[in-house]
Image (cartoon, rainbow, N blue to C red; front, side, top):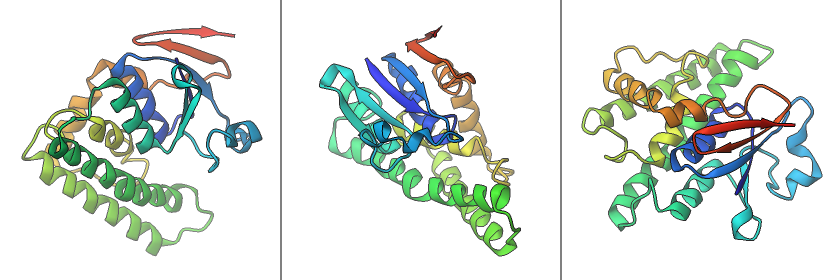
Length: 219
């Protein structure tokens, strides 16, 4: 059993989507940012950085893993799925995973901050991060003109990238004209496991126990 500590964010959805794709049983612990539960001492023992997502693998000695990309790699290796074993195939997946972790996530995250949340409208900052996010989308589009998925076959690279790109409107970034990227987005949106993963955590203060495709609320 996996304990998943998460919230309804792109980084959180990466892990719930992967867990659904793998069919692994997991327990959801939805953390409240308003209550600063991600900074609670108990959670900081799992993730010293005080951020979601994080997991604890109860089947392997209560082993904690934090950082969304590291969690994806750990779970893919644990299950032997969605991450090739051969060095070249693995490298291609890791390259596109790092492209998301080091590029799209940070740039689009800053676009969100300055476009949506920052108390002052700093147009220079908004333009910078929106333009850079759009440029990174164009890199994705060029790649997806050549292959169906970022690493050729469906992998954790797609799972990492999709929750961010699907939020492009919230960031004020257009995908107009990026037809290959739009095709890829639609393909991922249609996957049942992706749809289920995007519903985690449920909008409730309850704890959810999810096993593969079936979810049951418990008090």
